[in-house]
Image 1: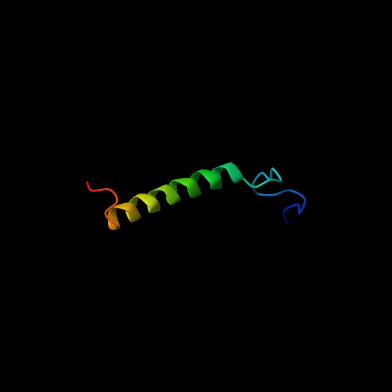
Image 2: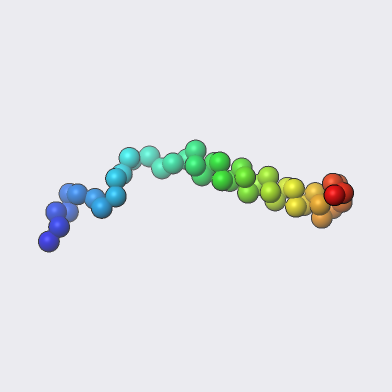
Length: 44
Protein backbone atom coordinates (compact mmCIF):
# COMPACT_ATOMS: atom_id res chain seq x y z
CA UNK A 1 0.00 0.00 0.00
CA UNK A 2 1.20 3.51 -0.74
CA UNK A 3 2.39 5.74 2.05
CA UNK A 4 -0.45 8.08 3.06
CA UNK A 5 1.98 10.96 3.74
CA UNK A 6 2.97 11.27 0.07
CA UNK A 7 0.60 13.02 -2.31
CA UNK A 8 0.30 11.99 -5.97
CA UNK A 9 0.54 15.62 -7.11
CA UNK A 10 2.60 18.45 -5.63
CA UNK A 11 0.64 20.69 -3.27
CA UNK A 12 1.87 24.27 -2.94
CA UNK A 13 -0.72 25.16 -0.32
CA UNK A 14 -2.13 28.13 -2.21
CA UNK A 15 -4.50 27.89 -5.19
CA UNK A 16 -3.38 29.58 -8.41
CA UNK A 17 -5.53 32.68 -8.09
CA UNK A 18 -3.63 34.55 -10.80
CA UNK A 19 -4.50 31.79 -13.28
CA UNK A 20 -8.18 31.91 -12.31
CA UNK A 21 -8.19 35.70 -12.44
CA UNK A 22 -6.65 35.72 -15.91
CA UNK A 23 -9.24 33.35 -17.38
CA UNK A 24 -12.07 35.09 -15.55
CA UNK A 25 -11.00 38.42 -17.06
CA UNK A 26 -10.72 36.87 -20.55
CA UNK A 27 -14.19 35.35 -20.32
CA UNK A 28 -15.70 38.55 -18.94
CA UNK A 29 -14.12 40.62 -21.73
CA UNK A 30 -15.47 38.19 -24.32
CA UNK A 31 -18.91 38.35 -22.76
CA UNK A 32 -18.91 42.17 -22.81
CA UNK A 33 -17.75 42.14 -26.45
CA UNK A 34 -20.56 39.79 -27.50
CA UNK A 35 -23.09 41.88 -25.55
CA UNK A 36 -21.89 45.04 -27.28
CA UNK A 37 -22.42 43.35 -30.67
CA UNK A 38 -25.87 42.22 -29.58
CA UNK A 39 -27.00 45.65 -28.40
CA UNK A 40 -25.42 47.27 -31.49
CA UNK A 41 -22.96 49.35 -29.49
CA UNK A 42 -20.26 48.05 -31.87
CA UNK A 43 -21.26 47.58 -35.51
CA UNK A 44 -18.78 45.30 -37.29
